[in-house]
Length: 443
Figure 1: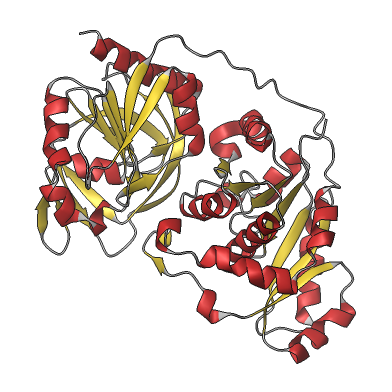
Figure 2 (figure 1 turned 90 degrees about the vertical axis):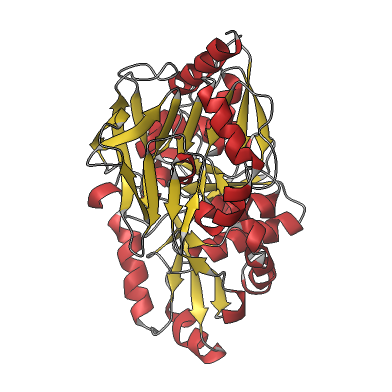
């Protein structure tokens, strides 16, 4: 069975332009009237926000380390339903995986999905050497379907003429350097989609400089996915309301996490800690994001005090990274700002990165909504540190990753958990959260 035509946009390395080009392809195909389902390989939150805005369909992460092969196939099939084409943006360099391995690399996911690959090559400062680079990527893994290349950062028509005649592989486009369309970055990566529309604007450049008909033809060469996974999952009958913080300060969520909560019986109620009040819910989910950019507003927000009262009443609260910081007593940045005061710790912004990489561990059973020995997989990436109280208690023991303190993560107080790990929710994890919410609602 072949669920949808698909194409992987890979890159030679980080910074070669694959995000801009993949987003531009999505925009150009959408402008043609096609229903484009976007995906991002790896644990990234920012690129999917641009994909979602461009395509009008929620972008999904595909990450074998966190999801496994079956999880990737399930998510791909489920999300692609009703789409005309799936465009899958790669991560880092095409063959770069966990700890220098193949795991969770762009190539790994392309093999899992049996998807053709188009390689984005940054040609700046090169002419004939481009061919050696392409040939190396093409030959490195002969099991991949290598459809062709897109040459980026072409400096002039003469630069193109120095490259094009000697190509031995199809070229889907030559993209000129357009500095004015670059998306601004900050400490965690590119700006979010609600802050910049530049990615969508790049669709015009793709239309002018790429052969979209050839790209569509390549996508239709996707091999059938014969090893289909059964995507039918039983939903839990128990019902609860989960408040999900969603605004400029809290905006890092895996779409699968939200879907798995719904499948487990949750009604998701979105709210803004920056400008709104805490809704009438049975539990709260605080994702990561950029609370450090909105500290004064969070300090004065009504929701900050309302969360403290809810926690004191025993409501389950689960928070990740930026959400963890928000639940502490204070965050120190340019000055000190008082936060929720729920967790026995203080947070401090740092100039250098404190942790970056995949996380693996298990729960140790100190919370009503997180039973012991529940496997945890996820990712951490932050420019802050937490100073916990000496008698701080934790809910997660990590075998991989730093967490809050040397492999300990999941700082707890009452029925509240805050961790640096951005966890990928398994069905068991989602059901445990719902069980905790239902128990609280019945008190």
